[in-house]
Image (cartoon, rainbow, N blue to C red; front, top):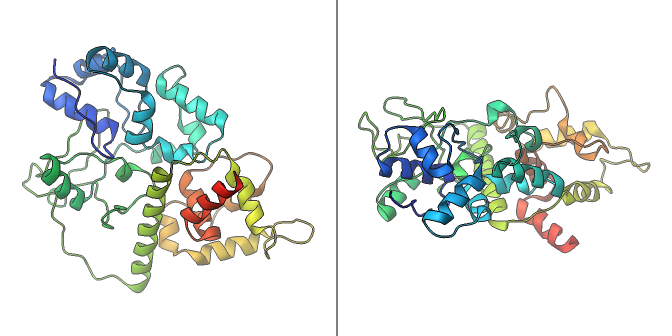
Length: 318
């Protein structure tokens, strides 16, 4: 039996398992799942693994020593959610990932099933760099985070299909490897010539690039706020026009300024529009609401200018 591949920088855990599947020569996914997780009927989760404890036990018996925290923090999208969960919620998610609770993370993470996508994204420049540095490209976890539409490193729009034949990387519980060239012959490291965009489109592109880089900062900062963000939001605007002397929130003024802060296309692409519901108000309600991290990050950018400014206040308040 071959060794499990060395996990590369920012490589998705799913990508490592995919490389193992290809290198092992296994003809079926079930054979690979049995070797890695001890159960041929397991389904491979792309973004957040399940039954991770099973993998850790088998890995440590065969190939060396590895811990689940290293996989979660460096090779899954878990850190972006962890930053906006309290300790109890975080513990429940860990139990789901490790296999001690039924795997239903979307109920806690504030995401819809349609956002828990199984379509993989890639950056053409990352494909070129990976092929040069390692001899092959691989799936980057940052590229799979809902809300990241541009590569934080190269500032290029991520792709999820081949520009040559429109083949989409839809996993559907299969192991999909990304190669330098598509079956149609297209070089994934090459870009199609950029089209001329309007001023509004250009502004939206800059916003989305900045948002992607802020999300990447959350991963690198590795800050566990434990719901301090809610009090920080209130403290930040408690002495502004959004709160009256009696402590009443001016929801309309807050929503109008928030909408003006971003382009309409940015909010639409990120599914964070305020047209049907003012989700901002729930940040200040006593009743608990769980939101996808991208909504927190959009609001943080609106209040603090950047995610780094916000985390600096978190550190000072600790």
